[in-house]
Structures are given as C-alpha cells and as structure tokens.
Length: 317
Image 1: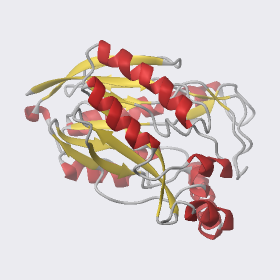
Image 2: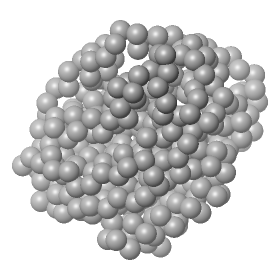
Image 3: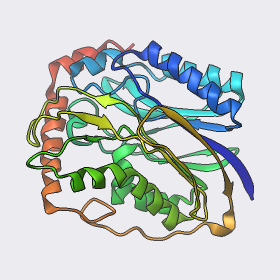
C-alpha cells in the first residue's frame, strides 16, 4: 500500500492567454508542492481557457508545444507529477489532450477526450485510446470532463484495473434561475461532477481527484438550441476522495488549491459494472438527449469547416 499526496489546482483562466495561464499555474503548482503535493492536477483546457468560437483554434499547439514544455520543466523543477489538458493540433485536426509529466520531466503519455460535449463538437474531434497512463505510482485513469459521465468511459475504466482516477473538468453552470432552469436544477448541476467522482470511487475502490475551473464563463456559442448562456460560472467544487470513500477535501467555487493524502490500497480495489442510462451513468430527463443533436450538428460543422482546415493545416509539417 502506498500513500500519496494529491492536489487539485482550481484555477481561474483567461481565454486565449496561454502564457498568462501557464504563469498563473506555475504559482499554484508551487503552492501545492510547498504543501507536500506529489501530484498536481489542473483542469481541462487550463492553458486555452474555454472560448467556444473559432478563436479557440488560434491558441492551439502541437503536442511538443508550450504546454508540454511547461509540464516537463515545472514537474522536473518541483519534483512532482503534473497534468492538464490542452488544445492539441495534430494531423489537420484539433484534439482535447491530457498530458502528464513525471518528476524527471518526462511526459508519461497522453489521453485524449473521446466525446466532445455540446458546443465543443464544433471545435475539436474525439479520439479513443487507452484511458489511462502507466506510471511508477501505478495505473492512473484519466477522464476529461464529460467523458467521465458516460457509460462508455466508466465501463472501459472498470476493465482497465486502475489504481488512481484523475478527472480534469471545465464544467460551468448557470447562476440565476430562469423560466427553464430552477434553483433546484442549478444545485443539481453544481453537484454533478462531485457525484460522478463519488460513483467511480465507490465502483472501483480507488482514490479519485476531480479538478474543475473557477471563475465566470462568458462566451458566445455556435448553437442556441438550449438558449444563450448568460450569467454562467465554472462551478469549482474540486474534490479528493480516498480509496475507502473518505472525503479528503473539497473546495468551493473560488480559485484555490486543495491538497490531501490518499492511500493506493490494492485490497480495496473493485471492478463493479457501472449502470447504463442511455449513454450516461446516472438517470436524467429524456430531454437531455437533444444534446446529441447539437453534437451531431457540431461534428458536421467541424468536419466541413474550411476555416478549421486552414487553421489546422498551419501545424502540419
């Protein structure tokens, strides 16, 4: 049995400001390391922010670009594992790629988001591969935001026999009730990433670290089927759970660093088959299936976009 100190760096990001976000992340990684963290997790799209327009492509980078260089250099300098996801440009496409650096500075590997959710489908494609990274710490499962909520990923993770689960999120929710959204709906949405973390923890008997962003979210969107987002905010609430289900820490919605110690205990590991509710791992309204239509339209727009091809081709050597 190993003990390990983990940290969630719940950062507030600036859209399109890669260097500024990495600079802020450096300070937060240093804070986490000073508190004893051996592995520091940043949210999904930490370097790029979450601007859902074609301007997102302007902040894309190749795999050996600014983000992986920052991961490598910072992990080596601080002697920690360090991970985040970024917008990768590869082979004429854009991908949501999570990379993890080990204390030597070596990039252990990458996991790419499988299912671009809602408006995301307009701006990058999904890719299926092994949802884990083998490290000296053990096998680390990685689920990027919406992927964690799907039966596809959960069942694959069950078969992968992971030792630790990381969940980087860019999960934002409305802050004000409307005719279509009640305060009860908002409360339920805010609690959902934490709920998903607890489900994986219960099913697989491994520590789970969920790291979300903080701060306001204000972006145009390419599809208004569900209305125009207004007064949205990244809900934060990053959480750390030990293998036995013990809560090691939970944040509010403000920028902060969460550090806690967990045990990697093989005796607690389980392989529970996750339940299936359509494509999800939890029940919900039949109305949520309209999101599939949004994603289908988004994938078509992405596939045939001349601008996307032009922007992505700039990275092809």
